[in-house]
Image (cartoon, rainbow, N blue to C red; front, side, top):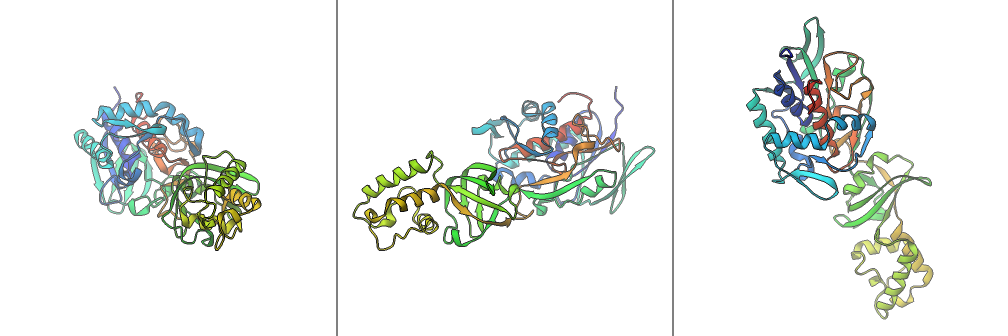
Length: 404
């Protein structure tokens, strides 16, 4: 029988709470040390408050994506569903493999975690800032501003730098760096894109179904389709946010405003048909039914097509061609992306090279583990980030003692 250990978990987010539960279920004494005044604040904000827990589709990860896939091969959607159902949380799968609590409320997820921790006798200490980790002959000392907490194992799950007001401020990177682990430059990911504002003047609040492509010269760096939201500073929406990590000073955004049409020729033929529909009517009605008037005006501006004081039938074929090209390729020049305050997740983080995907233990410092967003793994929207956080946390807590 495995000897009961004392496990200190640094961070009371998704990865930390999952780790605490799985360690406690193995019989360990567990202490959770959380910097904020309560655990799970970031969980409450995920999925617009609905908490997209996981995704049953193909993995969509960046950074150390192979490491993420190895972790989820051991503790992926099937194992995590078993974990949640064992603790009373009913799940619901929606389109594209996205899995939510059946209540549609993130608070239900956090309550499930909190009540399970309470049942298992896990000690939770909030308002605690960890300042260092020290190896001893007996194990580890977790150094805080008020005391030193002795333990056999430490699980660092302090998150990345995204949304610092909810507890992830990057302060726990240094705990792992001090024991030889390399930090890969953290950057905001899944965040809004800032652009030059003249092409989007007056468009703030307009939502469209679009396809967004990040271009660097002739190279397509990322392409995403979905809802696009125009703002006063640039663009938002899932398809824009998933492109944010690819924005550089040399990048351009190409927005296809009619992704349901195959190419410019199809769009141009549709515009010729519309020219006949709106014969005798003002030319600015040509795009009525395709785009809202404000966006139609910006498209005409970018195409260099004058519609004021003209009738629809006056529009020449080459002008329709120009409109079709812009509808297919509405160009925006990015000026940057929103920072960590707006980002849903951190790209970059602690290199996984010296961690085991089996139990997330450091190969440089035995008894030291890391889980969740603190590692150099980030996923697309759709539940991938929480799935890695919970999966890696569960494995870290188990420490290889049983399969999830």
